[in-house]
Each structure stands twice: as structure tokens, then as C-alpha cells.
Length: 224
Ligand code: HEM
Ligand code: HEM
Image (tube, rainbow, N blue to C red; front, side):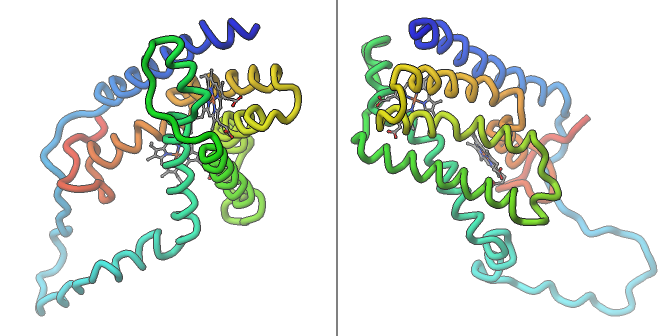
């Protein structure tokens, strides 16, 4: 079992993750088309204006931040930023992972100390607990929460919980490390085919699609 989970299953997980993500990007291009660059225009028509419209207020950066989600939900924004940054970066620098990369390929990314990645792991788990608490106890979030949201939260945090248990040798190590590898593989496979697809779609949505929340110079595509 151990050899299967550590060998072929890892291959399957990475291949499904990469091919699945490419499939989703190709699908996006098939379902969208090129348009002129993003430009917001005021609606025209209506009765002729008799007086000049009031000047648009010029907001400072601080005022714009206070009006944005960072101002209305600062705790959520902080937790989600830390959670996401560590969720992506921590596994890359875990010594236990890099030993396996080294054994398989002879190369690996640099590793952080185990004590440090252990703390980062705990921070990710704490972020997961915060999201769980929000979904359980905030009425407006609970109202739009279904079992699917809890399942996604479990899939995203399980590799961290089981990795932590394995590193600390809590419970039977041989069982926990198999569960950890399975949890990591399930998470990778889930990314292209569940709402975790928001990972590639964040970039598609914010940089390629034309809408009022597009970043930077504006997107170039709209849905067909
Ligand atoms: C895909 C197959 C995977 C394998 C074979 C694997 C293997 C391992 C191994 C051998 C350890 C070291 C445990 C120890 O110190 O005894 C470990 C720790 C860890 N893994 Fe994985 N892992 C996988 C996927 C993942 C994924 C996808 C994530 C997160 C996205 C993840 C997060 C972690 C973390 C955070 C730790 C360190 C826990 C701590 O130090 O508290 N792993 N993993
Ligand atoms: C790297 C690109 C990613 C970006 C830009 C991104 C962005 C977002 C955004 C905007 C949200 C919505 C609300 C919130 O901030 O919590 C969200 C939620 C979430 N993301 Fe990501 N995400 C990324 C990758 C990932 C990955 C790789 C995973 C796990 C495999 C993940 C797991 C989650 C989870 C579990 C939630 C929901 C939290 C809840 O239950 O409220 N994200 N993400």
C-alpha cells in the first residue's frame, strides 16, 4: 500500500492536476471570445442634461481601501491572504517533501527547517478553523453554505492536518503518512474539477475577462 501511494498515485495525482488545469484553460478559451479592450462607459440616452453633472469625487488610496473589501472585512482579508500564501508555499519548502523529490529526481527546492514549516502548517490549519467558524457561526455565511463547502474546506486542510500529525508522530505514523499522501493526492486531483478550480480561474477572471472588477489595463475576452 505504502509503495503504491508513494509511487504511482503521486504520478496520477500530478498528471490529473496538470492535464485537468490545462483542460479548464482550453475550455475557457473555447467558451469565450476576443473583444475590444475593457472600457467602462456611462449609459447614454435619456432627457438632455440641463446642468453639468456633479464632479466625480477623487478618492485617495486610503479612502479607496476603506471602501473596498479590505476596509469592510479586514480580518477576513488578512486571514485569507496568509492562508493562501502559506497553503501554496509551505509544501514546496517542507523537508519531508524535498527528500522525496531528491530521491526521485536528484534535485529539489531548498528546504526550510522542520520546526519552521511546522509553525507555518499550524497557521494554515488555524486559517481553516477560522473559515469553518465563519461558515458555522456567521448567519449570512451559513445561509449560503452547503455540505459541499465543508467538503472543500476538508480537502484543502487535510494535507496540513495529516502532515502535522505525521511530523509530530501523533497516532500510528505508518497509517498517518499514508493518509497524508492520499490527502495530498486528493487535493491535487480536486483542484481542476471542484470549486478549487478558482486557483487558475482567479487569474483568468481578473486578467482576461472583461468586467468591472478586472485588474490592470483590462481584459480582452467575454463569454460567447
Ligand atoms: C502528493 C503526495 C505527498 C507526499 C508523498 C507527501 C509526503 C510527506 C512527507 C514524507 C512528509 C514528512 C512527514 C514527516 O516529517 O515525517 C510530509 C509533510 C508535510 N506535507 Fe506532505 N506529501 C504529499 C502532499 C502534500 C500536499 C499536497 C500538501 C499541502 C498542500 C502537503 C503538506 C505537508 C505539510 C504542510 C507537511 C509538514 C507538516 C509539519 O511539519 O507540521 N503534502 N509530506
Ligand atoms: C493561487 C491562487 C488562489 C487564489 C488567488 C485564491 C483566491 C481565493 C478567493 C478570492 C477566495 C474567496 C474568499 C476567500 O478569500 O476566502 C478563496 C477561497 C478559498 N480558497 Fe482559494 N485561491 C487560490 C488557490 C487556492 C488553493 C490552491 C486552494 C486549496 C487547494 C484554495 C482553497 C480555498 C478555500 C478552502 C477557500 C474557501 C474558504 C471558505 O470556506 O470560506 N485556494 N480563494
